Length: 425
Image (cartoon, rainbow, N blue to C red; front, side, top):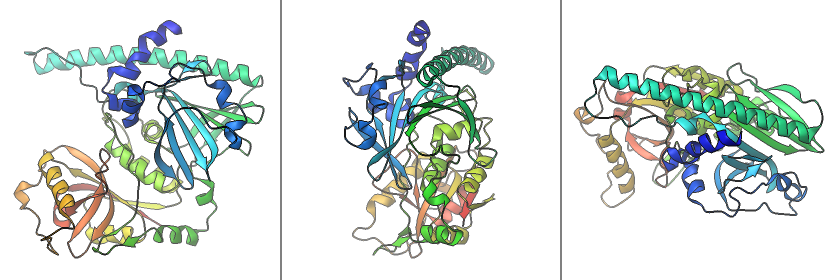
């Protein structure tokens, strides 16, 4: 086990660009020379003090997108927990009190990232493909060995802590998101092992209470249907510049082929689902190839809607009126669209210039000849608002906050979107 960790863990922590471990947070974690790096925090995690609020957890923590009333943060360090090196340690706090602590030990998305091996010049297309497939096969074999050895070690340590036979359970209600979990008990602590399809190994620690059976936060799960619709409608606000929008935190994509997943993760967390892009990658059947090819995302979008007690309609076109109707109800719209860097720069300029001197009330879009065509790269964005006077939609990207959403003219969005996902009460 130790030899395998020495061989594979450095690839998980450093071989890919910094933004890959895991998602965008790895750059901060790997660059942070924390005194907790390599320290075993098992005794700290399973002590009463952090859970009662009497003793703070050690280390530096950085916040990430919340879910319902739970504030999430990740540790800027790489400690050991249960004697095993952790890739990521995350806390969830409800009303300021520690509610859960999740430790990720293996994550295929971080390991494979965007897989682009360096190849010599002069190779034919067939030779390049053959070398890529061979290199990828070696990486898959290494990751699978690491995954299996790590899972065996985690199970052994959890079994020793519990001393009792664990219980198997299901987490999630929809078929796509239903996940088999293994629950270990250690005194008042529940140690929930989530091990998924040669992709993800995570242990979620909680204290007291009944084990969760749904990804949906209990606060949303117990709302009556009308109250749930009212909750989302109350999230809509119109400012003095005519922007009508909802607030959704960005879930950064990092160096992964996950734009379709991270946009969904933003919506899912806004809906009150305790899901992240790594768990969604498992449910979406992402292959260990460093690409999104072969994944099953449209069915996953519908599963997320159902899990959140919502409806969803998929369309092969973009309809501005339908999008405004969803946004007025406080629900985001996800669009898959054709992308170009030139248009992205224009959207950024449009955003940075508004509001400002000389801003016109209804700017004309650039001519269609400047829009990305049928052969352009494909991308996913989250619509969070609109401005009727300017005929613009406000949207978030999974790679940048930009201090707020970008802006795009409705005509351009209508012409370049090829799939639209409308969430409805």
